[in-house]
Amino acid sequence: MVLLRSTLILLFFSFFQSIHAHFPEDTVYPIFQFPEDKIPKMDGDFSDWDIFPENYVIDNTPHAEVHRDSADHNTSDLNIYKIAVGWSDKTNRLYFFAEVYDDVWRFKHPNTDSLDTQHSRLTGAHVHGSDIWEIVVDADHAGDKVINFSEETDAELRFRSAYTQNYHLYIPPLNGHYWHWLWGKSLWTKNEEFSGMGWSGNKERQFKNLWTGGKISHLDAGRIKYECYLTPFDDLHPNGITESITHDLKENAIIGLSWGFIDADMLDDTYDAFWSFNKQGKIYCDGKFLADFRLMPIDQAIK
Ligand SMILES: [Ca+2]
Ligand SMILES: [Ca+2]
Ligand SMILES: [Ca+2]
Ligand SMILES: [Ca+2]
Image (cartoon, rainbow, N blue to C red; front, side, top):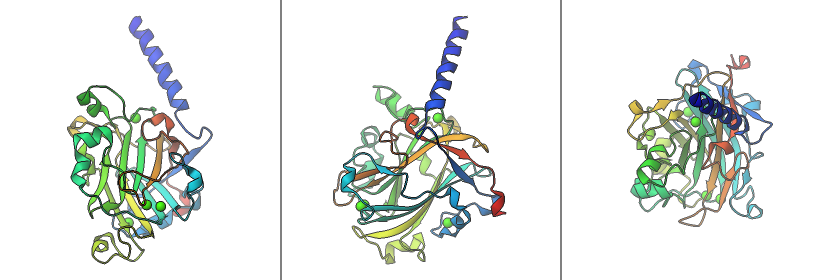
């Protein structure tokens, strides 16, 4: 009886939490479903994204600067021209596209090894001073936390990003290669089986060639395109996929999702602006601040 009552209370709070775990409260954004023969490749060729109907495309409009003095920022500092979010039932992945202008792109980091240390994963140390697309996913829409599970380091690192994943994706990849920092101990999420990306400094040049002949260099201004995919998890375990639970993406389900563009320009160890998609400053730490997105059926208009 006590157990039943506890279960009911738990169910009540889970329900209460899930129906309130979204900002804005009156909006559900659509996630485009890629047909099996149109799943995008992470190759720096962005024609994969041309099939998106206009109503799936997001621009600068909903974003707000929420960590600094927004009066100091404008579209000549960072301009988010186009964001598109897709999913595939075949691959069980979420796909993201961004076209962004920044007046100062930061390509370099003194030591990318420092990003993968336990110290960095716990404190977030050394992460900033770079341009980052921070994407936060709570696929089962439970409003799960990202951080602050325990004062014990081992317990904290076991659960950090386990139920809601927080990714810091470096645009451009630091020192030519480092692109993917998950805020937790699961270093394996960067493997191609679970995530991947492509980007280009201009629309003709593929990612591979950018480092030798790119028009955009460290501290240059430019408008770039970027594509990536991520795998959603209901429980992400540091030991690997066999101890983790992958979330099964299902048509018409609602997931928790948001992102922030962290813009660093002239400062080496911090950032100048955090442009949050749904105007929430705490999306980085808790799924209850995310927006609602629906995994849409295949749009008949594109067939
Ligand atoms: Ca592509
Ligand atoms: Ca900027
Ligand atoms: Ca979750
Ligand atoms: Ca920048």
